[in-house]
Length: 203
Image (cartoon, rainbow, N blue to C red; front, side, top):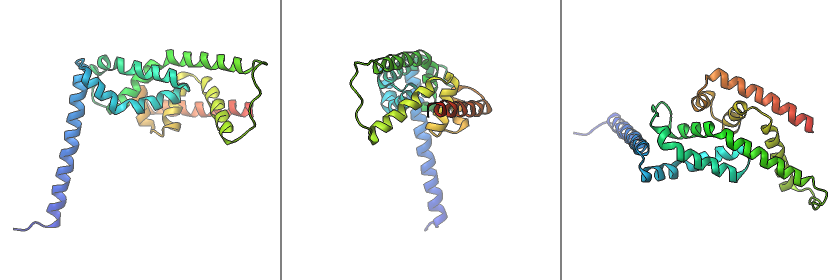
């Protein structure tokens, strides 16, 4: 007996649903193994999510080397952190939340390094800058933005990077930082206003 197109669609939906559930079960099993201290599971977790964590860390800190230290700390802390994981957010979101919690020390280190580099740049013995071109202008703009971000409180800085740079929703950012959505929106609002003031003063 032949089946109609509705049966095919239902079968495809059931297959897709089963694949999604299997993927969810696999992720849950991996997290459980990480929480139990399984080094191979931690390595697998790193392979799946290190690029996203590193991208966030670099945006937050502005220095690849210090960002790498933060990534290292995140995955070192993952086994203990996942013992309290309630599965009410995605694994990647949970890892970013660990990065936020670990960021304060690294943020101070990045700011100190940037100030040291700027002092060196003010040295009269330093060679004159090259003529302006598109690449140098881009770097200067990034540098100005990073200096402006340095002046924001950590909470505002995290919020504006999550929402304005990484295009996450307020709900997603709220899940990462553990704050109400309205609080995240307020932080973004004040961060953007402060950034406009800082960048306006430098122009």
